[in-house]
Length: 73
Image (cartoon, rainbow, N blue to C red):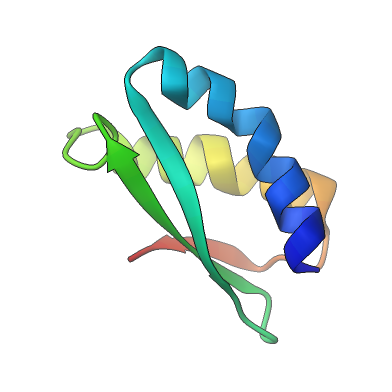
């Protein structure tokens, strides 16, 4: 499943990189929880939780229905 998550994250990356940020996959749990680290401008952005839930999590759940949630570490 980790490869599928990476492929889905690659669809999100260009938008994050356009704003000076990026996302790094930390862990894909067996429980369906994906842990990521927001980097660059996204790491300290006040809108990072919105980006995480409405952007990254929404796309990952659409691509991979087994995903339950995405958390930032």
